[in-house]
Image 1 (cartoon, helix red, strand yellow):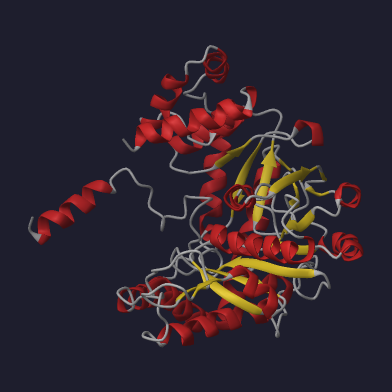
Image 2: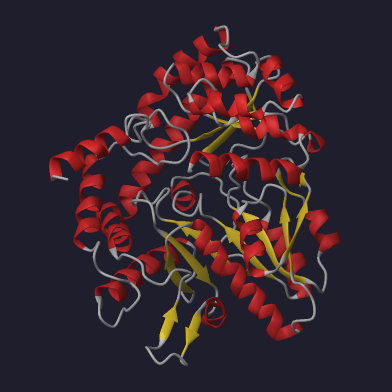
Length: 453
């Protein structure tokens, strides 16, 4: 094919995609509205796209970039003596932290026991994935006020505990777990603590600089042994940029893989992947250098402004926060509003929201999740006008009928509605509540395989 024909195919392929620059998404992208950030990132991404992070003795720029990016992250987390690794995403960062905890545990306790991770029910599924890959067991504990329940951890920690996993903030509710209190419990048992700050690591420090009251969660808390933070979230780098930090170098060694037996070459992996393009690392470096501390503070202030406007506006429509508002996330519920209908109405008006199932046993109702970006400061008025319309609009979906279809097992019709854009995909979370977990997981696998067939 000719170049023009290939480019035409690319254009057609994205026709059904939402525009990530529009400011109408509240998940998945972190838009600033600043074209210069995009420009500097894209130039760095392309310039280093063909260089391979596998061998940093050949591409020495990789060492420079990684030391700079990791160094910036260390400063944000108050970990001057920490060791770190650049990864391609939060899940990979968490995977390395879990591997380090597992290997550290085995050195101390041997391999007879299956190591356990203690985590609140609100923890990111990446920990479940890491445990599944690496042979650990996750013990999920109750939440209280949408945060990890300290008493639950005090009761559950044992000789099998290899790692306690906490969030700053958690994704569902945007609350920061009580890291300081749980760290005291962990210290008594000499248990490692990982703080998942993938979402908050590049914005909570700037909230604090701007005078916000942010609970301590970083290396200032004695007992925190590793932290993950994503540069491709509020660091505003292109996707494929995260950092995992370890309080000391010995723990980082446990996260690495080295093989010296191959006749080919010494195989050294600091991260999970082997061959990786240097572009995302170079782009992360470029954005960090372009913005600097002052640039990040300005963007953080826009997020705070957006949060204030949108929170106030949604409260006026009868919505309430399901937990304390202390990050860039709003999780809002309204018992008087059909949330499935509301989310679909907002979709009809051009907005992409995220619907979350409640945790009834912990007093948390179904809610909508909003991850706020700097661009939402200028979009807030339009968003709230449409939200007011969406509350009053007659939904184009019959929620009772959808639940009835679930009970009858008519999943194919629901999937068809999502494929055709008539139903928002986030309703799946709530609909699957009434289905046994194992069956629901198998159902999702089958649906995904069908989509990609």
